[in-house]
Image 1 (cartoon, chains in turn green, blue):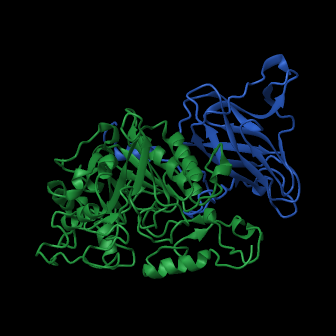
Image 2: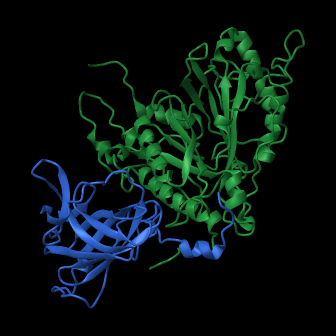
Length: 423
Length: 187
């Protein structure tokens, strides 16, 4: 091969980072596993770009936050929901979280878990992150009131058609990686080590565009073809922290640096969506399909002009469109979306599949930030004709593990306890 | 879920950090930090530098297979940081009536079985020996109680110079490591 333009990953990455104001996308926010993989690229042709192996990239835990919240979304998701077994008390959950935190800390750095039966599958973390959360039942039953973060189940929404199969669980792990094999291994390792204490209620698999297909930082597309997630706080913005991270220490609970996770499994009725032409699809959402720009704008990140009218005097953006209904004048009614597409084979359905969105949102206070938005959408949103929420759950996501400790320790033991039982 | 355990009961049941005992650092990003075996001073001969064999032994990632009763096994990587070979000749733990040093051997019929290791676990100078399912391991026999996942237990290793090292091993549920124990007059 000679001549012609070549795929220059670094240039693409630079472009992507520049377009998003250095909002944490790209290589800079992460580290590499020192396993020599970066230097192992064969020189199989002139001009080949030697980039660090995407498999060697890691996402370190920084500061007081668990990784996987403000981290750039990886390509693949396995969201595991566990129900604690009848005999699992606070001590049992403590043991479980010690084991799972240790697994996560090793695997996310490209190290095999303790007693890992497939250690080779841990060698390429590909930005693996594991983010743990506790459901309201765990907080109520196993966390003393003085340290209990304020978390209530979501209110019921009239349009929801909830299937208990995708309901609330006691513990959740959001496991994300750019590599599906790495992800499968990490998921299985965690499930094996949790098995003594908890049973898997569900695993929600999800995906985004593969790493490298589009520049890092590109807003995802959902399976309806829409650019999905344009309006999303980014870590570089000053209001990101108050929107996402819980600050209230609740009398020394140690929850500062934690957050809350809302999980909504949203089924898309794609067969029905097939009947809608492009103009209709754009009206439903209020954005162009090609660029994601609002119908009143030209570029994705242009501010929508909800007052603009067409030559007949009608609003250009339908007041019942998704973006009009989701928008709030209250800047506090925003949250961090980190959604993934899903497709499950389902021969019983007409298209042979069940597809949709594993909607994941992180917020410092879901009742204040998420619920009002969802109430408006539940009341009126043209998109509702093609989507239905079939699963719903909320979790408290504790801060990062204390040094030498495990995720959730501040809630289960308090911050004042010593690293128990030194022998 | 059982409800509201007394804080005192919880604290009493808490464990040292996973895979760590004295000397392990607190680096959150590297939990696989070797668990430095704690050598006992005063026991055993010392080499020219004053180190006992236990001082020169490092145990990395020690773990024990969970078991409700009966017997189980302990694993990990033993590293000899010294200039001369050393050997682990015996081991004890509070949770088992006896602990044996085992190797896994092939029987005449081709099946694999475990048997006590003659001369103990020899770790070459500057080298290491991995105790793992299907290979060398510590056999914990006559468990005095359940060995439960997510807990840790203390093993005391005695080296060939008489010095001892203590190791905190993490207990994990593990489906393998069910090798047949070759007992009695079989060997």
